[in-house]
Image 1 (cartoon, rainbow, N blue to C red):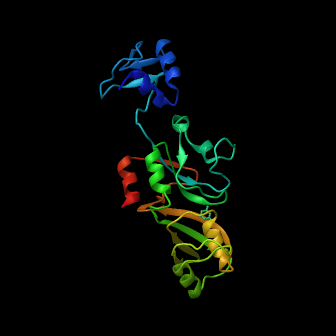
Image 2 (cartoon, helix red, strand yellow; image 1 turned 60 degrees about the horizontal axis):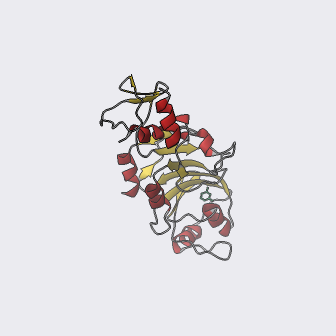
Image 3 (cartoon, rainbow, N blue to C red; image 1 turned 30 degrees about the vertical axis):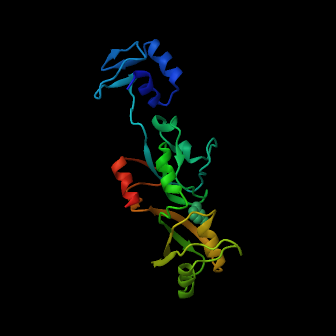
Length: 227
Ligand code: URA
């Protein structure tokens, strides 16, 4: 790969990479590099202002989203404000939004194909949510979720699994309509008091990942989602 392309992985544009190289801020294997077109070996260590540049083409970040943060960009209460600076200049997208008051499993990536595979409405990737509710669920609620609930007198949901888990419930859905879980419970005369996404496909939120923390996943780890 050309040096100037590699330096863009630091989150800067190609022209900013070229000027950083020309002004002597970039080193390859500890030697200041001056030629933006230099071809790098596979093992080259590139630094910008003394900091190693992470040359991965894409990153996959799993956040345990805290309540109080939105999935839109450019807001002080945005989940993107929680992303460490070394990734923050990458063109990250969230893979399936969560409401401001919902916590838990939130993937962010700059791999457009990956994001599409997660959010594509035709893939029907299962997502599991833990919910605490105002009222206890009944057998008829479980059946109604299984049969496909109609919400707000309009959309009919795909069959969903509702399981009791102590004083909470686990809900598995295979789509992602706006406020879907809250609207499903509302349709059964109940209200969601607390909501957390705990799993997407075959990948669970690690219990060790604290609220607000981010774990960088390898490409192999992301493959578990689709298993
Ligand atoms: N369903 C909801 O109601 N809210 C979320 O954040 C996710 C799913």
